Length: 459
Image (cartoon, rainbow, N blue to C red; front, side):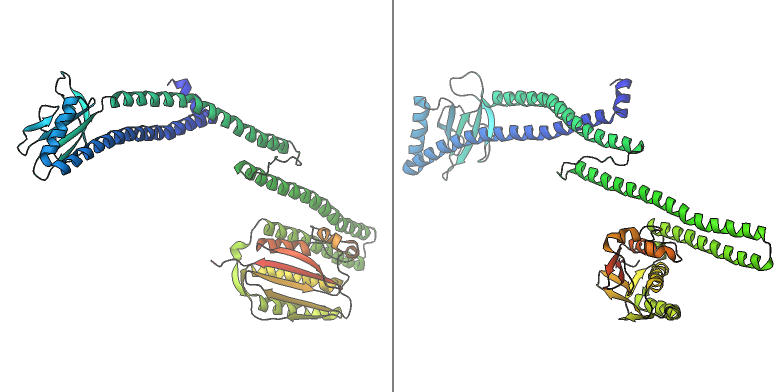
């Protein structure tokens, strides 16, 4: 093989696949041909052995009927009348002397009652012939040899070898043709994926790989790529919305900060400076909370935080949060209570779960009506745990709940109050970190927010 050919084989995946397919084809064909050869030869040999067995059975019947004289007479008649045109018979006494038959003497190398093939001279023939032989020792010590000519077995074997070589040679172009057809099919499927990838790289995020519904590896690859592309498209769209929303929400406090500074410059009194300083500090704190919340959500969505998973009691966590928010709820003329505060062991990120539930309680206090009740609780389902916060506020319409969980997604009634619109988004990201989900349900009236958390085996 030339250096150019070896280099081409190293560089070309198609060439390597064709050679591999051809090699596998030949490797699979050769055992089949060898099996056919041996089976065919075995069938022919069984035919010879069956013929010899039939002749031996007839002679043994004559022996049982007439003893040694009857057997000797039968062997002589068959040898003299030419019935054994393609066979041999020999009967010898216990000392090995010939009693009857059409060969001169007992072959010295033939011992035992076994099937053998060997070259022998028949009486009246100058050339040796190949016979298949079977022997039988009689109770009185005499030995009987029965054989059939197998000269045609050699040409049959040669013909089979030639046929095998021809089949092997024919398998090479068939294997090449099959490999080329398979490579053409695979390349067409790969080219479809490559075209979609090129379109995605060019900025067209709407392209998808076509699938046939056959659930073969190519279809599964296409479905996986389509799922990945849908996720990428959703993330890009979400990034665009987040960028727009963040720019819009940061623009308002920056505008107010600028207005405060201009007002102080126009009327630089001590009272005005103090008021402006406090207002600017509040605006900066709000922006910091917004940016910190955005970073926390991004970390949770990226799967960061699993290294801080610990075993803790969810029931204790809810009781602690209830006690912490009780004063704030009372200021808003609300009551807050934990239902079924029993022990629920769980393995997860206690800090993030506490922050997520805190955000939900904060939203319930912010939008709950005076005199209402906020209920929090947890349910253990074995394979999953459900945390929930329910209020008696205005709730969220079913057709706007997806909008409410987007980053900075604040519905119209909420825009008049303080906040960044990150509470539900963080709760959803924390649920996703724990292989769960966030659900918004109707509390009739009010909103019931549920965190469904999967059980994670502790390390």
